[in-house]
Length: 570
Image 1 (cartoon, one colour):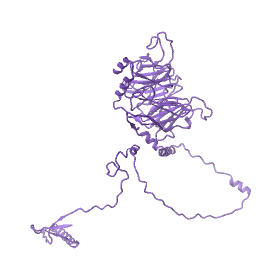
Image 2 (cartoon, one colour):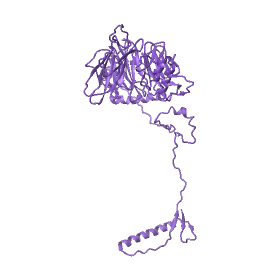
Image 3 (cartoon, helix red, strand yellow):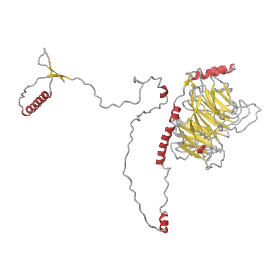
């Protein structure tokens, strides 16, 4: 502490006070305080004896002493000693959101020495009769623990997720990361098998349908059907299975529901992401609440059962008389009938509307006047319009596609021939709502636009197209499966053949294919009850203007001038 003496204004002298002088000054201040208190109580004049002088003090900051320092283990971009950002790019692409880096250096090994166990030898005489009496078990047998209790099942559920995450962590991170993008001039598609979902119960079942959850991208609902009776299977009563798989646990499904008939189709509710609607081979439509582990399915159409296999179901929202939206389910069966069902779980009320009877009649569009009338065209697929929810399309086994509105319950609006065989699927482009594709058993993938009865583009393969799907990140990329082959089409670059084909091992027959919501993975289902997940590598960068890209690609491949003019008007 430095002190400046203020006795004279012309010259100042710095005086250093030691501890003794400071104590004297504090003592004098205490005396003045005591005199002030006495003068206040006795009303006497205050006599102050000034035995010290005022001084001015200047305080200076000293150096900071660090007592404890814990350096950070996770480096940041602002740190000057870090490597450049380009060198850490390969490492950061595998980082998960919310991950924490901890230290593993604080480890300690401690040994404990206990007292030795004392042993003694004892002997006794006993007859054979006493030995037989004493060796008989008089206590009741021990009861086995209830492994199906709720507390134990929850603990095993968490424990199983922890174990599987340690084993599949790299594959799960690879599923979440985006694909590596290459230049547009040199492109190639590489598929890597990263995850597989299967159990022993689904070995003799075929995958009939799967759908992603509307809210949680990690939940995949899969339906299975057993069509052949195998004597080696111990459980003959189970013909259909519905699993809810999670990417956090590829070993065992999160939810299991078993049925006595094969399950043919699935779809999640539009309003409640926990409600799963399933159609069966014997005509039943079930509603499942996947938030409950043990749940008895609710039968929607029990009062109006027709016993025809349900081929496809979709969920839609429709306004009622009071202008409030309610959720309904559209279903098409093998008899060619489309019906609308209400999902009102409070009152369990069921409304049925027969929307369409798929029968070929003379005088219809795209049908000759002398054509043979074929009754009961079996429906195969049902698809809603992406923007106008009152319009739906139905594919049939005769190759026809029927267009109709929900309000029209007596007749259909339009019908045209799409394929020379069964139609397996109708899917709209995620970037252009007026463009949709159809595929079927005639080896072709046709791309259409509304109100035109001729395809804009036909992609042909040398086998039946079991299933196909649009890419959610590239408007000109389509994936399809045919037996054991996965084909990736990019009609902006090539239309004669696929840009990539991937052949799986012998004995695999794919039935379904679907892109993940981020577009960097492909999921497939086969006749052996196995779900495979393939990660796409070295994929070209998606175009910036997706709508212009698909229109330009269609214009470039059209040879007919009339179709090219139609494409310009889209």
